[in-house]
Image (tube, rainbow, N blue to C red; front, top):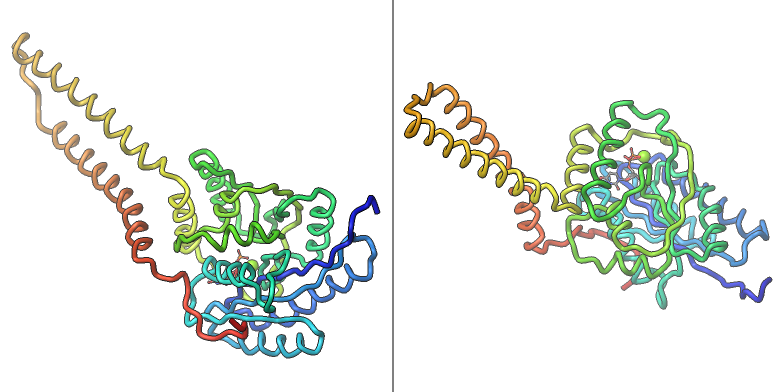
Length: 337
Ligand code: UDP
Ligand code: MG
């Protein structure tokens, strides 16, 4: 085989879960089926041994119980099923962070796994795509293979429109490039997992972090799939906040824009003032009315408050960052230190 030595690779499947009780078992079965198919197919250079890291993000339903049941089944299948349960809901970003840090440290004693796959628990990230990702990694020798959704079928039109606008702005004004349709479904080697795990920031925006760490990336594409069961956790408000947070996390251009705009306005008004003075003193003309003055005061008052609010967004983030609080608090886990 081209002198290539076949390796036995260990793969951590990292799964953030928030109220996914009806999906956990189906998820585990689907991914296990993919692992068996890979082992039987003979098309792969390496052999792959899957293990799981479920992160229960403070679920209020029976998600943790389901994960524990799956862990018992894993013991029978000789598959390591690990979990971390949070003390409350810390959000998907925190769950991703916990999973990646656990994988970087290693969950099975001894050395950490060679690869990690991050994916959703609701089967919206088709497990069969893992095969394509692994094959692509074998063929190209890249460091990460990420999934890109090529259709937004079944998603509300308004959500798609805002998502497109977000990617456009992000790519125009941030130093990093985020691919439209990129989802949090990717295969990564240990170097990437370690680089991300070592990032100390507490406000995390994974889509940006994946782009920021760099490395050689390849893409696989898939069509949008409906959730296996349950509802999405996103609301219009949380999605808007997520977009603003992501943008501010990776761009300082709004601050620069505010500074430039303020300077232009200041210079403009100075010129206007000089013209008015000349008109009054030299030509003896009256400066008319105070309506325009009030308009200007209100306009600039509003503008100043808006810009202060914008600066506040950044200061607020600095405030949270300097507190150095942990990204999440663990309540329970079956990973031995
Ligand atoms: N999720 C999480 N914490 C949260 C919200 C979501 O861990 O606070 C998980 C959820 O269980 C799922 C994934 O993140 O595995 C994606 O969530 P969802 O399906 O609600 O998002 P969508 O697919 O609509 O973008
Ligand atoms: Mg989903």
